[in-house]
Length: 341
Image (cartoon, rainbow, N blue to C red; front, side, top):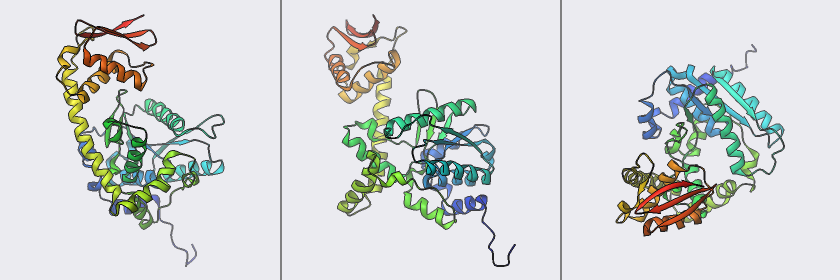
């Protein structure tokens, strides 16, 4: 080795440095409480795009849970939307995982998908995650959402008229109907903090050039709306949004708990509508949503249709309401049931 050439820092050393910069106690408390209950044999999947957030997450998991390194699997989905840049992202992720001694599973989006919507790309990515997690019998997916993402998501959801359930996204720990749990430990940290920790550790990452364009709604919110909003607020608006999300989640969980107690179904999955006469509309809305998920998880019911059915439940009058796909919600004698055909 030439006398003046510095030894290259390994990824393991970089991970240790990032872990020294951001302690495990900096993770969201709900995530730490959840992680403390998990079996050591459990496989943890980690979404890895190659960007600063996901790289920081992978390094932190490697540093703070050394006993689980053998059960960590990184998942990288190549959307193939940026040509050589996308290929370079995948190569970077391979080198990173090789340097940490971690398994990496990769997937590529087939076909020509330029111009695909954010929702379509996200669905393809999560389909890949689900497939790989099934192979490895993993029920846990770690995601690198941070405080800036919280503020962006809240502004986006407000523009779309979301209710309380939408405004609390992204949640730190969220288990879906498929029983897979999404874990987001970085919701207590800003992107700038993650980037600073990576730079301090001489750790590199990949930049997505499409983030600087106005192609997607989130990019427009991130690049134009969020800076203007923060400047107008004259305070740490991102931290304020994160705090609001926490408080809204508390309210949402309380309402869901109330609804769960009211949504007691008999063997025929019949809902007693009369018991909802004196219940606030916010709770009735959640009871109806739970009933629909139980009896008819796949329907053609629009938002307007849901509101009409909600009004019918509140009236409690005899009703036969189409849910699409030959299903009907029928209210008779104060009880609501599902009828086919």
